[in-house]
Image 1 (cartoon, rainbow, N blue to C red):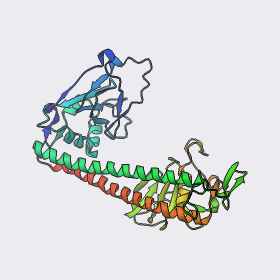
Image 2: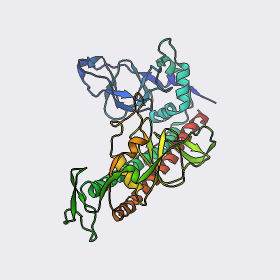
Image 3: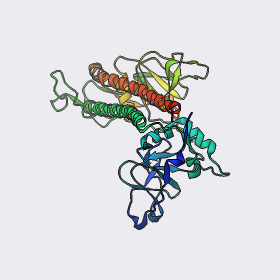
Image 4: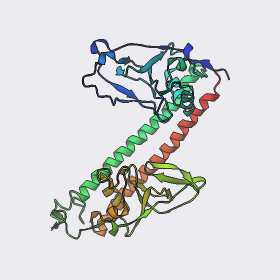
Length: 379
């Protein structure tokens, strides 16, 4: 394979923020993008910070305790300042080496492993400019590079479009939930907003406010049965999604539950409430739920999603949730017709979100495939 030495195509840039010309302070994520810096800059001399301009690469040379990844990103748009300990470089000739193509190389998990292997030091390990210059990679014709970048960015843009669609759908669902179950403006039999059209309301002592006539206050356990997930280490790889508190962890060959369910983290990211409609397995640090009455799951999902479980954490050092707490949660229980109507409305939204998220999973796999193919290119 005809690989080229990166140092022959890049040049280090060292520019400090003299006169405090720039004030946008950015950090670099190990997921290869810029983010708001975590540094407290009160009383800090920003003139000692380095300046990064459009199409310049910025990387954190420290690799210790960084998730086995190197933090590197390609600056786009306005100039910013970064930590004095960061290193900055740019491509010498963009008609020979495309910066976005180079960023794709840096996004490969193989590059992260390479950078960790090449890091050096005792108490702290570093991957510095010398090591960056010694990186080898295939550099095909600039036309081929641009073609590869265009393919990758088309996929990335589609993922972003899908994410925005899901965000707007979720905003619509939240608006609908508030209208129906907070403002009590669900459609009455004539299709008019219930409360403002004179719908009957009764005072509820538990909530200390009026609620629609025929509604009541009950417990979460009146609507669902909370069940523990199970250990998965004995399972083989398959096509059934395995859920943890962060979402899908992998795919296994067995089904724990095959009907729609609301998944509730038992430990870790307590606020990541999930609604799933296809057969699944959930880990033992998750709860899954079985509905006790019809047309109640999406309503329960929206109610739980509105709560801040992290602030309600009943664990100690590790955030955790218990069945006792969940079962004893008081909850507003609408009448069955309203629940059925709401489930019908929200099912359309949830189905589209699930379909779109599934498409993004496939697109993310395609991104990984495109990155892996870089290693087979002729330089």
